[in-house]
Image 1 (cartoon, helix red, strand yellow):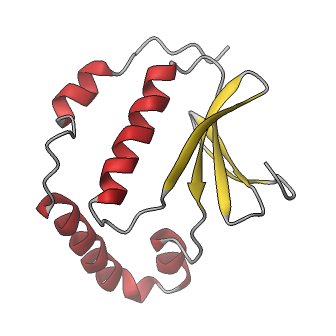
Image 2 (cartoon, rainbow, N blue to C red):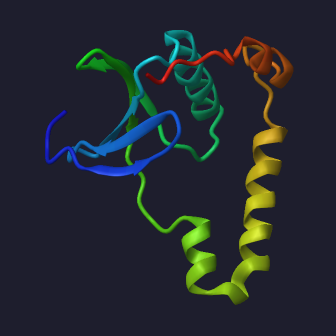
Length: 129
């Protein structure tokens, strides 16, 4: 990773770093099965290639024994931040979210696993140390 490598977000399974080169690095926590990272990359690639407005997954890579995915960086306010700043726009944002979901569900991808298949493939025994 080039640039300042600062954490811009984090969650239960990963930390997101700014690469400073127009990309971000989603670095998964140690103990997360590699298959889950590979599934996320594959599904993200399929969705991006369908034309859904999502960050472009670039590649899977490792850093200090942990696996991560490089994604195209996107900018702008999240819907949550927009609603927090302007709560009267909640219906506008809800409508926007519904349109995004409608777009996603209108796409067909023969190589996309079903939600049931994806859920069954997820490990419930993730060791986060």
